[in-house]
Length: 191
Image 1 (cartoon, rainbow, N blue to C red):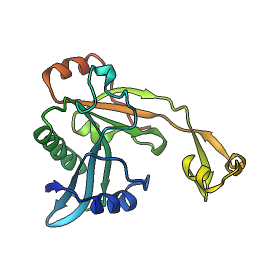
Image 2: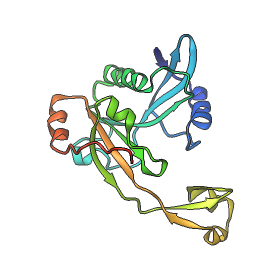
Image 3: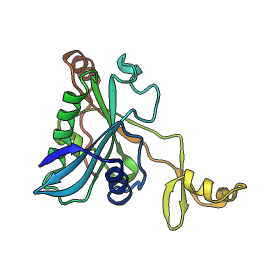
Image 4: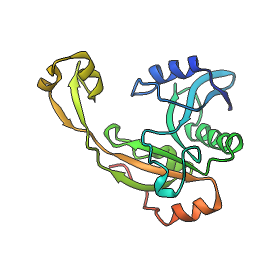
């Protein structure tokens, strides 16, 4: 297995075709994954959704990265191996980064298997304050229907509380390891 910097075209294609969200996240660092000479998709790291994401760890923007997308086509032999290689590359290419953060989507029944396999630390399961809307035959984020149905037309669609996320962290320094270990909780298990 080999990883190399990914082009924006590769990121766009993989995220729109290989990931359930079908959305291209803002990513600072993206890796294309190859196995036996065949392109398998991308792994992307970015600043994350929240401006205060690293604050609880005493980190400023640029001292942490969020694993924002693992968009692979299934032709790789081991997803956790690809993620582990990407993590090592982040540590090598971004020496200022002290912590990696990622989330497993409860709404997709993800428990964080990849993170557990690569020894991330489970921190918490959060509740969401947002809503999903049933639109075009499936539940999804409310942004799509709100944009497609102006003048409040989206309000007539079925809605449900959006499921939360499971938060995992991976410390890259000794100091950060000590801090994160204090917050460790047992890994969630599948039902």
